Length: 422
Ligand SMILES: [Zn+2]
Image (cartoon, rainbow, N blue to C red; front, side, top):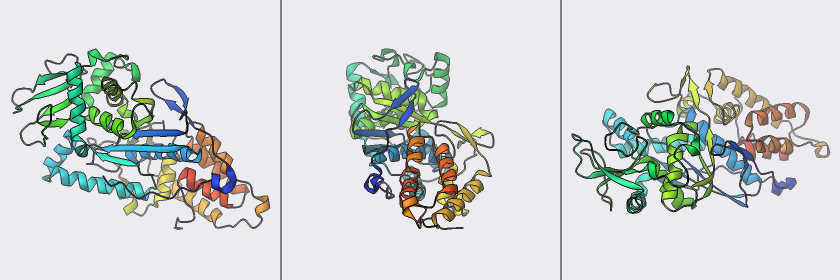
């Protein structure tokens, strides 16, 4: 489906600064630093939104983290390919549509447009391919068929009273090849069952071979959307959707599987197992998790009703560049809490940077450059708070030169030449 407008990214190499360093980032799968990519190209799959409560600060923080990684890669001269999904048919989306008395497709389309607008305003680079699950029903069903044929999946009658005509298909985690389930995310049995329950996994359902077995295909229930397929009429499960879309768009293994920390288990872990069942040697070389954002003492979530929406903040007059700075002031892997004063502090920082950018460098021979400072801090596990501090210190001692302005744009996504003063 249509993505959103791509902000221009200046090339520091073209300005005589050479290529930047490759980043070293914390890989969740090995719990260690990894320098990525190993070669001249990088590919990243990012788990996208379920379009019904777009776009809260938790979403924005996650996509900004991987935007920073993309920018560091581009600066290093890496050829980058990215893909993302939109889970545009899923239980919570359908529930919301039912509650609000709207068609689920309409709700998804409206929310996807809101997401596009928010991402473009924040200058988050769009994925090369943004794919809706409803655009890929046939290949996902083909993947489920393949897992049934190989014995990695099994059929289970839908619970009585749900009105299903066909059978559901579940993934058999007891057969997981090469890696034990939980190994890839270092999660113990009790925690896995609890997380499976939290993320709609139904561990108590009778007849399952393991409580952890996830749904690959949900047979049609009355009143729910369904598609005809070689595994029966129904709709796909969440983990297999991402697996098939990522493998189709990027091939497996690709460089980075990216998502918020709440996706570590079961979602990202099961993607890895599904991919192996579908014949890939490995799903992704590294797995990265962004931290979660809390508000008013709780993780931001629709069920708690404590969402801070990007669109709401922008409507109230926040400058997108200031919001971007407020988010970049937190390390991408840390969980943190949004506090009401953060935006104002970021607006003030942006004003200081703007005042500096308006003071031209009248003697270019004296020019010092922020380029090496930004590169070294961001290559070190995308340390954006340190990068912002480096700019704060730099503007105290040096005039605004073209290279520094371009680096703040290319690496931090803040184009000071286009931001308006308050
Ligand atoms: Zn996903």
